[in-house]
Image: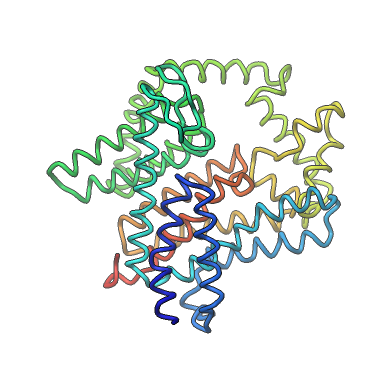
Length: 402
């Protein structure tokens, strides 16, 4: 019975990675099956020190901080329960990390499943130019408009930036022939989907650390720094050749210039959040105000009371968000989590897995400066699921590489 359940897990976990990009509701079903089988087959093996990694430990510690924060939060249940639910994903992925440890076949299936899902998203994004696809979020064909397929352009572009590096690594793997050409075309198509087929700016920003990571691991940090000015020119030229991106860049300049007069613009909103949230943190710098307290407590620092409904959802900065609710302890745990990803990647003997984990950690670190990726459900799933996969891959003994 136990062996059959594990055989099932060997396909159910990859199904999670296939569907969380393409069929969100179905991915939750596969996740639930995974968690149930994990509990049914629970054994002492999962308590072994070798199975646990530092990222898993910091995820558990951060989740524990969220639970402890429920005991002293100043927020009513209607708000604290929202954060409790959203951060529960920190705990959900722990069984996947434990299950994938030293199971290279499962790891390979899961990564391939993710790649299939993202390739489908990419192809659909390009088809959106000419066709109205029923599964696409954007339903307007033609050039000069956003063609994101997933829930919104931010999460799609964050994931697509990671996919660019994955495609480049696949092209490196196939030194010649049609497969190399296919992966290079997919990488270029993914870049252009970010710069030309989306209205967002986040994708371009996180694409930079993604490509820097790939360059540093592929050619070394020194050569990458030398090539950086040329890469910046090429990426800038690609962005400026897009009418969508030109409009967004011009809009960004306008929003930044008018940040004090218009705090409701995208950039003005973020800058106002960054200005007010430290005032809240200063009141309880060590342990914060408790889980979900930001939503209500930040309203005391608004210039106008009616602005509360606009600015109280999250701080557009995950570091500040954790610090407001859980103090410097919470923010420190989050920073430790990200740092541990870099450490695991640095120590890994597997070039491809190391590059992917470096890329993921870099994107997460940058994205957390102007978004709240652990609070935003879809972003959290991407980062946490990929952590759960890439950390075991990087810790795989070289002789058992997937």
